[in-house]
Length: 223
Image 1: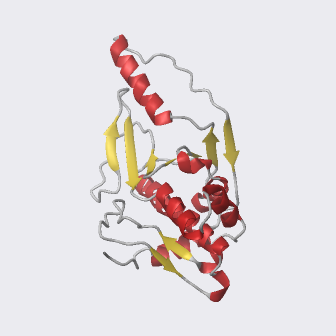
Image 2: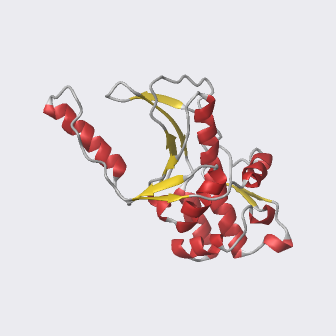
């Protein structure tokens, strides 16, 4: 799972996928394996927007989010801030649901932003599973992975352990390695080291978070 401007959920499988709904795009890699992928339009930009609304930096947003309970006492953010492509909702807008006096605090809004973004990516994981892709753990990269709140909330939303490597330009590294392989003319991929310190985050599952999100994600406005 890569959380950048957009959010990407992808896997490596030995069999191709064919998703008529368009949620999962099927790619192939140069080793003969397959790369099913779901990509959302709104990922770290959701955190950017929430931080801007609250007048804090990203570290401040993370602190606020971790001060609120799981589920943000019923406050749910549907994060279609620029429309969405997975699912295909180009004219959708973001929306806040479940506002009550008790949850109209900066902490609750910060938590709802983090959870809403993660719920959209969790839907992408479900789409991969629906194509027969086995999902056993999540490897989290991208700028959004540097948020402590994202790292700590993700396992409870996804219901899986989340492994976070040392920050790096992993996408660029992969592209450069493939280019180097082609230029080398070798039949087999060179034995590059992918060693990196990895920290594993675990948490009790919080299914209520996704249940709340699923109940309102279709109730978005249009522009």
